[in-house]
Structure formats: C-alpha cells, structure tokens
Image 1 (cartoon, one colour):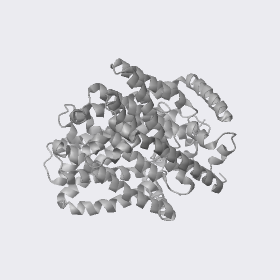
Image 2: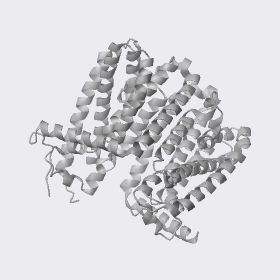
Image 3: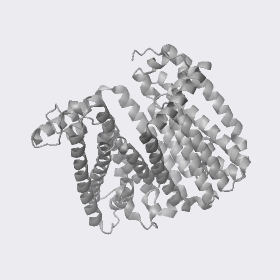
Length: 258
Length: 274
C-alpha cells in the first residue's frame, strides 16, 4: 500500500508537470471535450422534447444528467482495465510485473494515462457541484448525489475490470466488454424508466446509478434507489472478490514472454 | 532529408491494382488462419444482433407511433446501419497517421514502388472488418428476404448505399489527413463527428422531422440511411432524390480534392528520420 501511495504521488506530480509543459496537449483535451459535449448536448436537446413528460424532468435536470453521464464516462475510460486483454496477449503485462507495486492497481490507475485523469476527474466533479448549486438544487442532496455518482462509477469500473480480467482464461473476451458498453450506452441514452416497458433489469445497471438515480435523488425521489442500494453494494463486494480470484489464479498461469 | 510527393503517374494503375489484389488475398488468408477469431466473432455478432433487436424493440414500444415507424422499419434500419459500419470498417478500422508521422513510418513507404497514399490506405485493410462483413451479410440477407423488397428498389438501394459509403470514406479520409496540418487534429475533430453519427443510430432521422436545419445532418450516413435509403427500400417516394445524389457526388469530389491537397502539403513538409 505504501508503495502504491508513493507511486501515486509521483505519477500525479509528473502528470501535472506534463500537463503544463505541453500546453498544446492540455488545450487539445479541452477542445476535444468541448466538441464532445456539444455532440452529446445536441442530441439530448432534441431528444428531450420527446421524453420530458415521460420522465417528469426539467431542462435543469437534463443539464445535470448530461454532466453526470459525461463525468462518469471520463472515469470509465481513465480508471478501468480497458484493453487489458490486448496487453495480456502482447506480453506487456510482463513489464508491469517487475514494478514494486500491485499490478492490478497500477494498471487501473496509471497505465498509459500518466495519471492525468486523476487530476481531470476531480475537476469535473467540482463542475458538477458548482452547476448543481447554480441551478438551485439542495446543497446536501448535491453532495449525496456526488457519492451516488462515485458508487455508480465504482460499480461500472468493477464490471468492466471483471470482464477484462476474464482474459486470463478466455482468449478473445473483448466482445463481452463491447456488448456491455453497448447496453450501457443505450441505457444512459434512454434512461431505465423508458426501458421499464420491457424489463426492470436496466435499473440495476451502473449507468442508472450515476445517471437516472442521481437526478431522481436531486428531485427528492429516492425510494427505488434505497431499495436497490444494498444490491448495488453487494454487487461491488462480489465483483471485487471475483476480480481478486481471477487475478490470483490468472497470474499463476500467466506465462507470456512479451 | 527525403522529399516526398504523391505522384501516381510514375508507377501505373496496374501495379496499384496488383497491390490491392495481394492485400485482399492476405486479408482472406488471415480470416481463415485464425480460427479462434472467427468463432469469437460469430458468437459476438449473434449476441450483438440479438441484444440490438431487443434494444430497438424498446425504442419501438416508446417512440414507434411518435415517429411513424413500424417494428420492421427499426429492424431494417438496424441491419443497414450495422452492415454499413462493418463494410466500411474494412478500410477505416486502422490507426491514425499521426503515429506514422511521429514514428517516421512514412520513411519506409518511400522505398515502395507505389503511391504513398494508396500504400498507406491499402496495406492496412482490416480482416476483422471483412469477417464482420461476411457474417453480417448472411444474417442480413435472411431478414432482407423476409421483407420482400422489390428487385428494382434493391438495385437502387445498393447504388445509394455505395454512394453514401463513398461519401463517408471521403469524409473520414479528410479527417485522417488533418494530422498533416497538426498532430492530433484528426482525433480531436473526428471523435465528436463519429459520435454524432452514432447518435443518429439511436435517434433515427424521423426524430428530427420538425428540425429546421436538417440539411446539416446530410453529412452523417446514419441519418441518410434512415432518411433516404429506408424509404427507397420500402418503396416510398423520396422527393428530390437526384438533389441528394448530386450532393453526395459533389461532396465526395470536394473532400477528395481537399484530402489530396492536405497530403501533398504534409508530404512536402515531412522530415522525420524515423
């Protein structure tokens, strides 16, 4: 743990230096996100007309929903084991095993990204909080909703990491992650309330936690979320144990030469 | 320093066609060589299609009557969009040229007796894309036979499908070439553009029937597929079809010209040592 903290500190320091050293990179990240926000925002703006009444949400709700989903997608790309299977196949895991830190956490937090997400993600959380206050949402509910977002992000990352960790035992497992992301994308686009006409299972997906339930919570509607909360926490625990087991047994049989 | 340009006349068309043929053969060999990939993709496509039909049925339940589409329209749209993505994936699923620029990859291209653009374009054909295409084609054909589409409409539909495909390729190649102007510019501009196109899969064109500036969406194939191709295959009338065709043809020509100019500019400035 001590090693991991020391590495984290160093990585954050390097990430900060890199961010301010290469200004073009820093600006390009913001420009990129600006266009991405525009692309998503445009669709929500058009689509909102069709589902305002069904969801009972206001324009403000949609703005916050949009920020929460965007924030979470950033975390998903930055803090998960995405593309781990390819690292396993090309033997790059070997280089990480030589580091004096836990390889699972090292890859989750820092691999390929130099820790810049650790700086960027808190920035987005601050944006969410400021916007929610600016739009006159209750300050306590805003703080709680940020915890709910964290829970949703955690669950999503754990599911992705679990599916990616299967690569130790299944040669071609990328399609599981792709399929999962496809369903998540659909769920965050249409919200589980619309999906409920077919099945209520969509309420259990992580996108529902950091998207739909956050807005419901901010509007003082949290009965359903409280009913499902124990299941979400239990899922996190079960997935963590499964990932641990996959890594313990997976690393034992890992033999790549790189 | 090595100077580069895009002279195709020095090498001849036959050589380029030979090179294309060889790369297609290699692609087919890769498909049959890696059996695990083949089986995993068969499984993936089947599950993917099943999940997507389920998701589109939810879309139909909620918005079918609002946008005036039958369930069969949603399914046909899904198949067309999916087939379009994988077919074009054969040539578009490849890395950005920024990697080749920064790593000096173009240095090795200059020794090849072939136009640099075509070399870069053809030698990275995706066999994954081919596998997906073959499989999606067979799945789609079953559904398309079920829809009883008139032969003439199929013919017209295929022509328009290819035209939209060519237009989209022109757009994607133009975006890819932007790395010659500034490293990373292609990624910054292409990703939001691609996401907008993806958005038109989940929100097909009838959602925007009251939107005044619809002409802005003609750049996106997923919009055009729902707006033009689907009505043609269903046998509905498309008003001013030829105007759209001219737009696609002229748009492609303009984009190809721009791409060529950017490549020429980039190669004339290229100085990497690799």
